[in-house]
Amino acid sequence: QVQLVESGGGLVQPGGSLRLSCAASRSVFSIYAMGWYRQAPGKQRELVAGFTSGSNTHYTDSVKGRFTISRDNAKNTVYLQMSSLKPEDTAVYYCNARIIGGPGTFLDYWGQGTQVTVSS
Image (cartoon, rainbow, N blue to C red; front, side, top):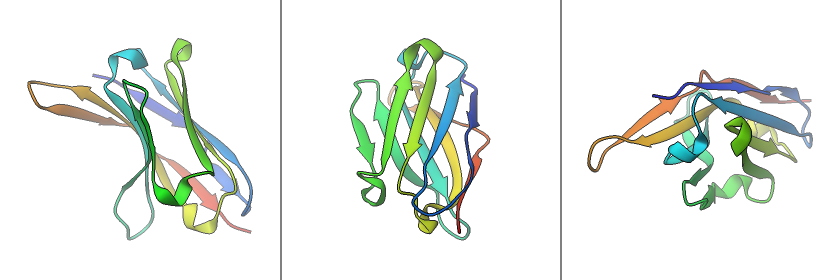
């Protein structure tokens, strides 16, 4: 198991920046993949940015060049630096950790979510 605690959301004006943090209860080295998802009202949850244990990173097209995912292994923490924020980035952001379960299976764990609102 792994517990995830998120922080850093809030209200920001368009063009502003925020940094989200996700503290994991175990070493990120023991986690197969971690990422940030978001869910806006009336929309499905989508992967925003993530990386696997091999450090391969992925960004959804709408955030490329604006968002950066990173991690601090010593603190077991993953960050999402968000810049040039747009109103359409408004959503609840969730941290996800995927752990290898049985053969060919994965277990997903989620944080509680943090609200990001981009508005003037």
